[in-house]
Image 1 (tube, each protein chain N blue to C red):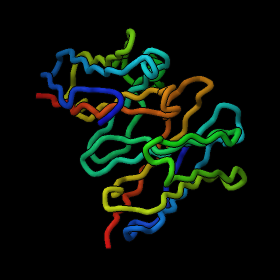
Image 2: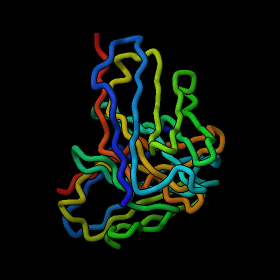
Image 3: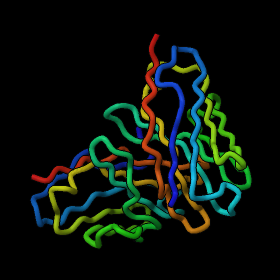
Image 4: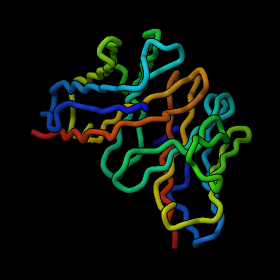
Length: 121
Length: 110
């Protein structure tokens, strides 16, 4: 079955760079149509899509955060890494990774449990 | 401000039918399919409806989705207490070249 799990720091200081890793199993990111996305949710607020990477290394970013985000994949390790630069307290949120298949339009059908990242000095 | 607009709250009594709307534009809902997610308190979102009106395996047929023009709707019939959750719509946006979510609707079962 498909599982995803996020890992990374729980606390970062303002201006620092956040690096999060999504480790998954049950699918391959080299399979046509498959993608892994990152979504965040500030406490008590709505979901916000951040970035997506596809099997063919096509990458998409939220326009409002594009300058701060980088998404990469390591197919051999079944991992997707998201980096976000210049962190600010408003970036405090639960960060989640999720699987999707755009060839059959599944939406984000499998999600990790999410990891809470707090930005504070 | 979310690209897709949802009412912040909705409510109903057990057994009732409720609908949650999601309003977008020609670059997202009109051009692409809509997905819906249910988020129970303290848990990760769960895919509820995909491709406008398809239910993943295990989702009760009390949940249904529809789309018309630049709007989409999620309907829940035979409302149950365990349906109390936040619900989000989502679609691809051709202009933004990425995924957009609605602001979420908090459903209360009275």
